[in-house]
Image (cartoon, rainbow, N blue to C red; front, side, top):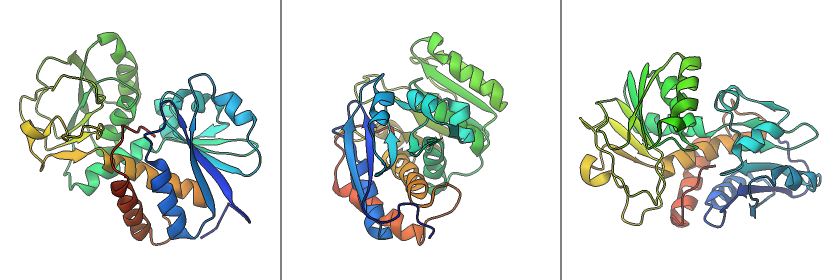
Length: 284
């Protein structure tokens, strides 16, 4: 493995607000142990509008940041260069620091990996529940999986403008409908509703697989009673998938090369995540 951390401890953190719930320290702590890297990974509370000031005071010991809500668009603006997924979504959730910070969006890859690991077959159509920060990553992921049409159930049509525009760029037909209407039969669906949302959207026919990005509910996914465990993918799968990609970036300086014995590293990260519980919803 070509290491980029050099001699001595390197510092990393997950930044956002709120942040106390974050499972990222457990995930990346496990990755560092498996890879033999001297990382100090922390949580840092950084509110909206404060990311630039936070970066300004970091010294050369800092290697990178995991970025969660509400800072992903700020991170995109502060990155000197970004990958194609970050360019399309306008959101960066991973920063590799230095004189010219580099940015990536690993949320998209985390969603793609979640569906692949669940054995999802060919995708021709998709659905997204909600139009929050994860929705654009979900749309890009569904497009990468092959979806030509995506239906979005949302509270306010105005919030769907960005998704419609992104769909045009991707060559995907995006249809908007009220959150209260049943969603059509689709191959893959992503729910981006937060834990506090009371609504349980209905489907005209159960999707082959649904990824519920909200894993914070103690009683489990809101979709389990209607769809069953064989169709619902735990949101922690997305969290793990994107964190493995982040570990590639932090350890190797790029995203395309797998970590040494990556399956073993991912298994250790999964064990650490499960052992830490589900204190809240993480979007990084």
